[in-house]
Length: 288
Image 1 (tube, rainbow, N blue to C red):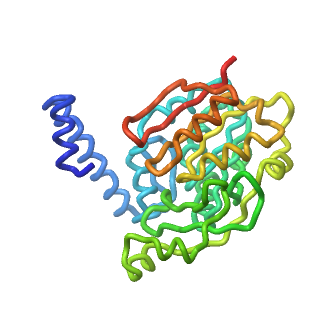
Image 2 (image 1 turned 135 degrees about the vertical axis):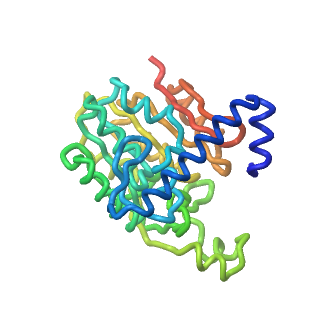
């Protein structure tokens, strides 16, 4: 949605004063973002109340800093008392892992991030927020099987880096991805690069975490269209039945119905929907 269309949408649906309020919030966030850019400090205090390492001009860092990801899930993480284990799958620089550290009910947090540079920032952010004892960064991706793989890294927005797979979860050939592009070759080479990564399936994930039989688990998945295969991997773990809730970002290109069918079949239903159209977030809870 362009800025002009967004203004018209707010005016039509929420009214003039709502537009003024949202404009003031936006201006405040931009000022805050640029003030930290000028500061001499290595870490910034995010709108979410956690410290994050400076990573200008990455868009994901910007959204962390100014609170662009909304309030629902951050509030849920701070207050929930159902799960004592949190799996942050597609952790990026660790926003939700760091927020989960603020909830003493979480005894262990596992943060999965396959990008090497982003993983290094994640590790530093965990240390800066005094999370070494409870939060474990893991440099793997999760899928429906274990394999050597690769990601397309987005240099402008680390949150849009992705594993590209076909309908069965097999990785798409790099040459095909490079050919089927909207950008010119020069633009593509500036924005993107390939990175080899490690991908693990359900059995290997079970062995890696070695969770106790009675552990209650919450999961967040944000993997830029790879969510169905992450779910298949989780279903094949020995702790799947202990997962009480799953929070998923449904992006435009994700196979929404496949995810919903998988979760419904496994006994989950929608507890909360945030957003509209073809891009939204869902909190799914296991039916009792």
